[in-house]
Image (tube, rainbow, N blue to C red):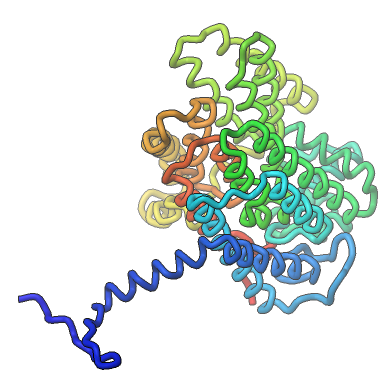
Length: 459
């Protein structure tokens, strides 16, 4: 016999008290309803951005580089305070993004130009502060300084460089040669040539280039997406991406900008030179980070499926020519650091548990081999499953790179939150679907795990 609801008197009238699970559902609905109101969503996002700016302006602390760049605007923030601020900022930006997209789903239609201007103003502030959440920009600057001095960043490490540049690099990466491509090295060397013995200037220039690439990608997305408002919310006005990509100054931002251009030209390709341009863009992206090859595979797969052999050959040829021209001055040894980096396993990767179990049973070498062979298979299976959840009317030029990139984030042994940049960029070109909330959740979990400025989570 089902339980009888409790009856309470309210002003002389009998009313049935809701069971506890109904109260929980009602509370959840009320919170969701409040959060998806435009003013609430914008307010939460702004508060998250304010906390981010405070952390960046209060360097050095536990979540920034070891020195204030370019200027010390505020007194250094205590370690515990900075950790609370970073956690809170990330959480608010996640909630704000959920709210912004939810408000859009319920009919909120702000002007895309207004969203772009707000995003541009925020980026202009963040790029002039000390990088927050990662020390990668210091590594970029050190590799650039090595190249500017005539050294080989694929052999020489930041620790061997020494000086002010090495002081800013995280201790984990002091003994690691560059794992980035030749295009990245040229960009870093150009910044270091200008910065000279002033590492803060080199890093600042790299931050400005990164911010410009972020805005360029946002502008192109607004101009080319079927839903400009949603595209703006997913990229240029996305508070979570500003925290991860702009405040962190990551090269992944430049790769995402090239991906937007490549997808755009792939969708509208009517002449042979369009395919050549796509191959060139993918080649340049791989010259930044080799992981961008997934973008090339994602763009090539629809052509192979449709047996568009001529188009596939043009794209592949252009990509091969650009890659060869990029790596030729350095030699194949430029790929050597990638082999050791490929054996790394991060938390919360699903392979972390496999590694711990395997070390005691199979040994280090065998475990690494098993993981190296297994994760690409898992990635392809996940890509197939994810692609089935994308609306059928989506362009394959955007949907396949999205699915493949998202699967890589989930399956790869080493995954960082800023690796999702290209996934977000291609998501902005897709119709509305259920995978966006999973992308937010995935990015958020990674952000909470890896957003410490290269210091580790310390108090």
